Length: 503
Image (cartoon, rainbow, N blue to C red; front, side, top):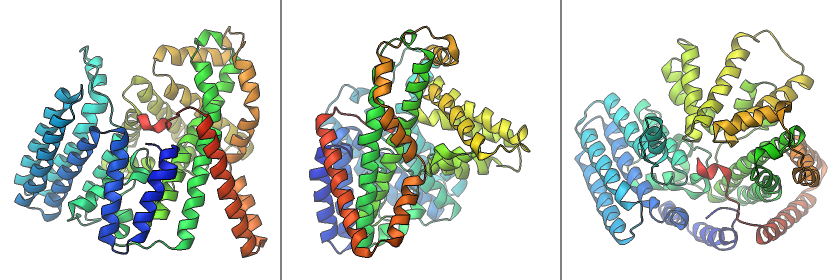
């Protein structure tokens, strides 16, 4: 299930909101959200939801071990129960992948719990706990890539949706417990709700437990927050359905044909479409997640801040996917030494890991290292060079477009072929790409405007002088129009999942 599906918009979400808002007790609210979140995930992943449950239970138990700094026999109870449930359900709901990952999941769970329960020091316990959280991600996302790299014929199992995001959330929780930034959550249902909460489960933002701990234990939803949440959600839905899917259709059509049919001009045009598609697709999802969070009483941090007006690559990464950037900074870069020692090595590791997090392929690793090279050049060779904004913004934007070439094409041969075409080496005639790109120009203009602070600035200026009653009318009109337009486009269009679902 995705946020832009009519099933979600007109059945799942209303039911969830009605149940949640009608309850006063926090425990009851959390129970509703846990059940609805597991149902949301199981809608598309009826088997892999069991993997998420098991991983959550194991890491919840290990979090208690870290927090108490001693063996905790009680951890065995939820873990054993979880393993029993997962074994029974796998027996009932058999799939082609079951023989591959059931024994691995159960074995890893047992071994990690057993080792964690006998460790009395926090440092080995947290290392083991992070390994326990990472093992499912490594197996499902990277086993095929690693096997192929060493010449083994193993494709690996299919990738569970959202595993990269909920794994990082679990890791941030375990490390924060170890650091003393938060206490371990004693209630396994509350912890599982934090891991599985449907607004940010599938494609982020990566939410740290310390940022929502108070809201998990007690929260209120007022009318102002709920209204702001609805508007933010529909803004994100519009980004996805109206903008991202429109330019994405051109990308899919043109890149669905051989690259040698594309000319240099068309190559730049299609890469511009993809540049806006991935931004409005991903930032649209983040807007929807933040909006849903507000409707449910959670305040998630911003994940994007107009990255395409960045004046440098460093500035770009302060604005793009902020929750991921801060995760790598706080949990890898700074612990390795940050700016104090081995800075270049630390940067290399972080950007290689950033690329690998996005996908199990050499193109993603090269994408990460591409930004490592650019940031290194900025830091050491252009330290005293400061371009005026009029030049810095378009220069940074073009460098980002080059990066998306690595990101889009998983075949390295296609990556370099695309670069060749973009630099004048193409021989295509654009018999089909040209008209498609011309037709999408109005949408590209909207994308360009929408990727700047201009729309928000205009809204704020209007609301500053408008009376409250007029503000209310304008908001109601906006919500109604956006909902009607997005519904119409969803009904008439084809299924278009969010791009970050595959990460």
